[in-house]
Amino acid sequence: MKKSKTSRGFTLYTFTEIYGGQCSLQMSSCADEPRVWLGLDSGKTWNETAPKEQFVGSRMLINRKLAAKLALKLAAFAETGEI
Image 1 (cartoon, rainbow, N blue to C red):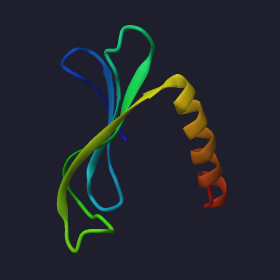
Image 2 (cartoon, rainbow, N blue to C red):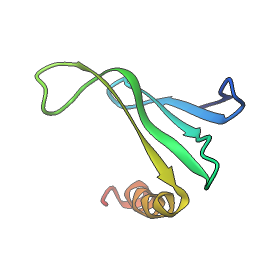
Image 3 (tube, rainbow, N blue to C red):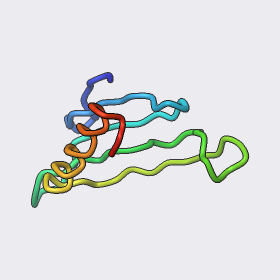
Protein backbone atom coordinates (compact mmCIF):
# COMPACT_ATOMS: atom_id res chain seq x y z
CA MET A 1 0.00 0.00 0.00
CA LYS A 2 1.17 3.46 -0.85
CA LYS A 3 0.31 6.28 1.59
CA SER A 4 -0.26 9.82 0.38
CA LYS A 5 -2.59 12.78 0.87
CA THR A 6 -5.47 13.98 -1.28
CA SER A 7 -5.42 17.51 -2.68
CA ARG A 8 -7.54 18.49 0.34
CA GLY A 9 -5.10 16.93 2.82
CA PHE A 10 -6.95 13.70 3.66
CA THR A 11 -4.95 10.49 4.19
CA LEU A 12 -5.10 8.17 1.18
CA TYR A 13 -3.82 4.62 0.77
CA THR A 14 -3.75 3.16 -2.73
CA PHE A 15 -3.25 -0.47 -3.69
CA THR A 16 -3.84 -2.94 -6.50
CA GLU A 17 -6.25 -5.83 -6.03
CA ILE A 18 -5.58 -9.38 -7.25
CA TYR A 19 -6.92 -8.80 -10.78
CA GLY A 20 -5.12 -5.49 -11.26
CA GLY A 21 -7.90 -3.08 -10.31
CA GLN A 22 -6.77 0.14 -8.66
CA CYS A 23 -8.23 0.54 -5.15
CA SER A 24 -8.07 3.02 -2.31
CA LEU A 25 -8.77 3.60 1.37
CA GLN A 26 -9.35 7.30 2.01
CA MET A 27 -10.49 9.45 4.92
CA SER A 28 -13.83 11.08 4.19
CA SER A 29 -14.59 14.77 4.58
CA CYS A 30 -17.79 13.91 6.49
CA ALA A 31 -18.19 16.43 9.33
CA ASP A 32 -20.63 14.59 11.61
CA GLU A 33 -18.56 11.42 12.26
CA PRO A 34 -15.28 9.86 11.08
CA ARG A 35 -15.76 7.81 7.91
CA VAL A 36 -13.59 6.28 5.22
CA TRP A 37 -14.06 5.49 1.55
CA LEU A 38 -12.91 1.96 0.62
CA GLY A 39 -13.03 0.07 -2.63
CA LEU A 40 -12.29 -0.07 -6.28
CA ASP A 41 -11.56 3.19 -8.04
CA SER A 42 -12.38 3.41 -11.73
CA GLY A 43 -10.61 1.00 -14.01
CA LYS A 44 -10.78 -2.41 -15.57
CA THR A 45 -10.99 -5.49 -13.43
CA TRP A 46 -12.19 -9.05 -13.67
CA ASN A 47 -15.79 -9.88 -12.71
CA GLU A 48 -17.09 -13.42 -12.15
CA THR A 49 -20.37 -12.64 -13.93
CA ALA A 50 -18.79 -11.06 -17.01
CA PRO A 51 -17.06 -12.98 -19.80
CA LYS A 52 -14.15 -10.51 -19.91
CA GLU A 53 -12.68 -7.49 -18.16
CA GLN A 54 -15.08 -4.63 -17.73
CA PHE A 55 -15.03 -1.04 -16.51
CA VAL A 56 -15.88 -0.89 -12.81
CA GLY A 57 -15.68 1.71 -10.08
CA SER A 58 -17.33 1.43 -6.72
CA ARG A 59 -16.33 2.56 -3.25
CA MET A 60 -18.10 2.10 0.06
CA LEU A 61 -18.52 4.81 2.70
CA ILE A 62 -17.81 3.13 6.05
CA ASN A 63 -18.20 4.48 9.60
CA ARG A 64 -16.24 3.27 12.63
CA LYS A 65 -18.93 0.81 13.78
CA LEU A 66 -19.02 -0.97 10.42
CA ALA A 67 -15.21 -0.82 10.15
CA ALA A 68 -14.93 -2.66 13.49
CA LYS A 69 -17.27 -5.41 12.26
CA LEU A 70 -15.38 -5.76 8.97
CA ALA A 71 -12.03 -5.78 10.78
CA LEU A 72 -13.07 -8.84 12.79
CA LYS A 73 -14.05 -10.75 9.65
CA LEU A 74 -10.92 -9.69 7.78
CA ALA A 75 -8.68 -10.65 10.72
CA ALA A 76 -10.30 -14.10 10.83
CA PHE A 77 -9.78 -14.49 7.09
CA ALA A 78 -6.13 -13.39 7.34
CA GLU A 79 -5.51 -15.95 10.07
CA THR A 80 -7.58 -18.92 8.90
CA GLY A 81 -8.47 -18.37 5.24
CA GLU A 82 -12.16 -18.49 6.17
CA ILE A 83 -14.76 -15.87 7.07
